[in-house]
Structure formats: structure tokens, C-alpha cells
Amino acid sequence: MKSQPVRDYPSEWVRADVSEPTDADRIRHMQVALRRLNQVVAPASLADLLASEDKQAAACRSFSVLGTAARAVSAKMKRANPQIAWRRWSFYGNLLLRRYDRVNYPLMWQKYQSEVPALRAALAKLSQALGVPQSKSLDYSV
Image 1 (spheres, rainbow, N blue to C red):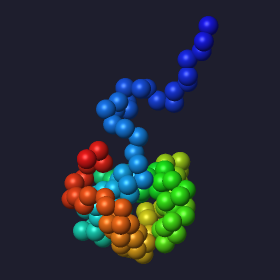
Image 2 (cartoon, one colour):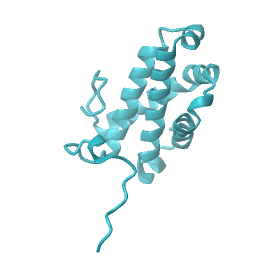
Image 3 (cartoon, rainbow, N blue to C red):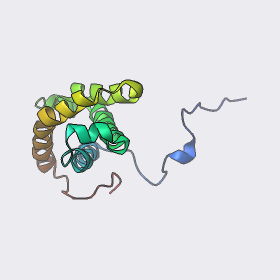
Image 4 (cartoon, one colour):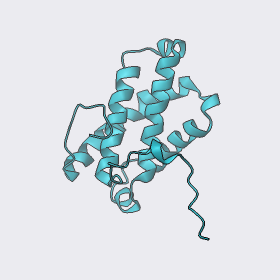
């Protein structure tokens, strides 16, 4: 009797009508995460972020998507674009997924202020070079 492959997740949680994302898709996902992060964090102060669990959750989700997408970009794309700190963004996302109970929100705020603008600019240049369609959508599947 053949054994069935073990799945880490219930299959119904994964959409069957969506193909595996390409590097261009991952870049677009990162841009969507940055737009979502900007909607939550930019109009807020650090005090607003610290006072709102909804803002904290949304910021964590966006940083997690940034990290997950950065990690999934191919090695070839990463080597061709060393101006993006792929490993660092991957680390941030992984940290938030694994240490969700110990998030340092003041540090997250500081990283948003100091590192996100450069990432946004680098991704914009890269997506333009790759011909990734620009959209204002906040949907990862578009």
C-alpha cells in the first residue's frame, strides 16, 4: 500500500486556481505589502501603533508578507539585484512569524522609517525593469 504525502496544511486552504508565483509575482506581492503597510503605519505615530492592536496586526502581516516573498524570490534574481537586502527582509518576516509573541513595535516603527523607503524605491525600479504591471490594488492575487 502506497502512503499518501504528508501535508502541513489542509488542502482547502490553498486556492487551486492560482499557479505558483513567479519572481515578478513575488516582487508585486512585496509592493502590495508595502502599500498595505503604508496605509496602516504612515498616517500613524509610534504612539498610535502601540495603542492599536489592529494596526500592530496589520503591520506584522505586511512585514511577514515582505519576508515570505523575499525568501521565495529565486537565487538568480537575488544575485542580479544585490541592492535589495533580500536576506534581511526574509529574516524580518521569519522573525515575526516565529516570535509573534515578542514583537518589538518601536523597532518595527524604526525599520519602517529607515529601511522601507529604500526598499520601495528599489522594488519600483526592479518591477519597471521586469515589466511588472503597476497597480494600486491591495490584492495579492491580481
